Length: 502
Image (cartoon, rainbow, N blue to C red; front, side, top):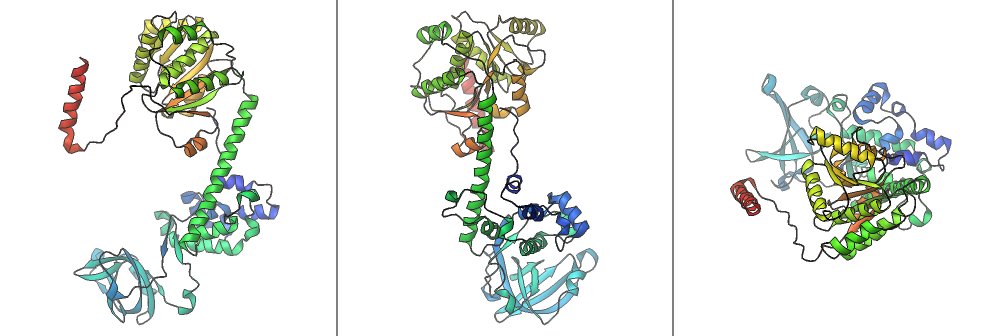
């Protein structure tokens, strides 16, 4: 699989040709030009959250929302409540203790009872901003001490009845860092900056970037951004989230499909013109079982891919025991029929040895040479294998990362099979391509279940095959979880299994 880096969601959106110069320049404005930021805060936002522009701040979404429209009475507070919001008169502000044990305590009183508020940090700043006898709105995590409800370090603000209806129904909570908090940029302050941002931009700065037929029954882009940050109801938040998620996945999928089309258009690959004696002899004489319908379908797909003269890049997904290794072998036999070598790269030496043993047993009556190359291969055997690969006297090689070492040179590599492909990096897989002037066909295999949507998104530049059948008589593979307390039983089971093979 080639090294393709998807542009970010914001990059694609801002690059849209629909944007005018003025629209692009506003969302591209440096964050220090936003009211309330300035050079010092901007520097912190860049270092801590990678927020460089207005657009970056717009993309800094809240990780949750809290409902601050519900008011509790103090008498109704229950131990099972996590967060509460109470309106009351502030009374009895006093300092208790000394030095590290020093804390400030105040009482909030409403018509039903009294609630204790406590601060251990920032006491001097808090005390300067509180006025005894004034009505406050208090929000925070409730706890009980000696049977009495209290809130430690509450959010507290003067209650102004005229402004309560203007507050967002769901208040956003943004991620921050300790360094930002020390500069007065906690999650709440970042929310205020975002509010300021929405006062400066309009729907003209966020034009639609999807075709009109995809917007039927979907929220507009401008409204989606507003509702994700400052939703007017849980239902509106969900609709906004659905719109932005759809947009991101749609653009990512569009980008991947463009890459795929470009690859098919320009890539060159070995031409496997025929299915010859190696394949037919093995299929008719040595195949130990009847292929399943899924195996036959995948072999046909691979056969069509390799007969086009374009490089095959195919992901093969199937459960353990579904017959992926047999598909790999049959594909390698097609390569051999056309005069090409093949390799299988596995992530561990144990798995490579298992593949070598099983393939060697299947091919023992065939006039084909197969070798095992790993990090522990002896020097003399390594030299023999390297010579055989360079001279084309070794048809198949099974190995680990040792296969991609620079010293390993093939005379005519036509097919590379990569098992458990997620265990290899992109650069490691790409090194196999350099083993041949014309890149070999690539078949990557995995037993890891990949939902179709994820597969299309993460592996969209690969063609995709699924082995959805098990060969007849194959036992069901079970994965179980055992707790530490049953370690003895697990060890007994392992010993019994080992003894059954000895």
